[in-house]
Image (cartoon, rainbow, N blue to C red; front, side):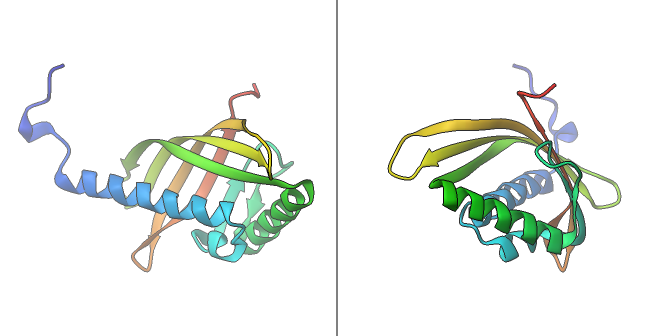
Amino acid sequence: MTLAPESTRSPAWAASLHVEVQQFYAHQMQLLDLGEAEQWAGTFTEDATFAVPTLPEPVRGRAGLVAATSRAAAELAAAGQRHRHFIGMFDVRPRPDGAVDVRSYAIVYASQIGGESRVHRVCVCQDVLVRQGGELRVLARTVTRDDLA
């Protein structure tokens, strides 16, 4: 493997941003998996969009995110299931305007309480992150599933 000369490598801030993005997603997925709908929605901008193939149209805004996440958590609880989201393989691309494009892979595990775990879905997640009050927030998320064309 040949490395680029030192002068053309990504600056140190790129590594720092990558670590910040990883921590952001680790925290965000923990909130989602714990059913903390309000706190999870707080990791999005007030006017965020969230598009997933399991819903007929994108969810818009934090209130919509809270409603959709609360509904999903209630459905899982009623079915005696738990979901865990593992997200990684981050491709982090800062934009000149300060926004950050992030493409990642997500594996969702479904566990029957007291039973077995299985892979529920494998997805690609494409986000646009922005800073608000110094913190990363999701402005737009588009999720595609590997099992859908």
